[in-house]
Image 1 (tube, helix red, strand yellow):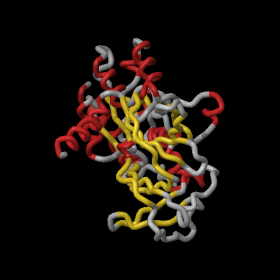
Image 2 (cartoon, helix red, strand yellow):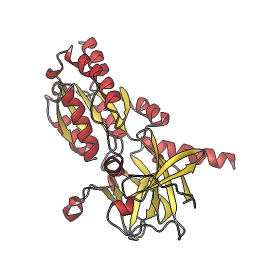
Image 3 (cartoon, rainbow, N blue to C red):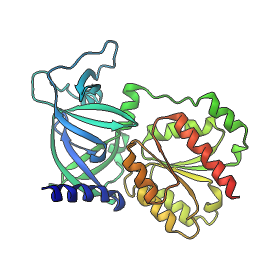
Length: 311
């Protein structure tokens, strides 16, 4: 039994190095299939009978539950998206307890379905009418050829819980002591909310930047433009993205003779120590958890110091 468990854990860990993602499929009140990266999940539990209401909270925040001795906010993401409210008080419902950006939240769902593994190449950015949904970041298909909708959970949480975007004066001062405006940064993230935060931090630090929602497109630019290796001082790249993920992007950059020295900062809501270690293993220079402006500012300023030290 222990050998089987060890093998399963090892296989899941290795997915990060093969451009694959394991998803938990689940249903909301609209009975459509949705997916979430297993690496973001702490546990899936039955919704407790006791949910403590929070005064003056956003309507889709249903309150807090006791999870392992801690108060965890639970959110009906279906209700936030305009669906029928999940009647968790009278019907069997579930909570996906997950970690985003160093914070633990609970997502109320109708029920979980199964686990599947898909290559990031099989996970596509939405097109046509689907692309008009501001909360849909990718689509895939299950074994029955049913569409799996992968929501931009980061954007949803930002809109529900808010997001700090101001860089503290300490880092603004550090940036002003250097001539940072000459540096140009490559930003790669499929989440609009995450790109907006990164861009805001860079603007406050007086950097210029170029943003992409796809690592595939960003890599194509780097490989096709002979000036690219001198054009960007660094890349700030998400990990979870359709097409190729941030780990694969990093490996491909490191294997390219003209790009191998590009400074890469992986920036992810999967903020546990395991992913920090994986970032180093694939060749990233550093790692920062998402939606922490000061932490991102500190990493960027530190990167420039390292880059200048080499020149």
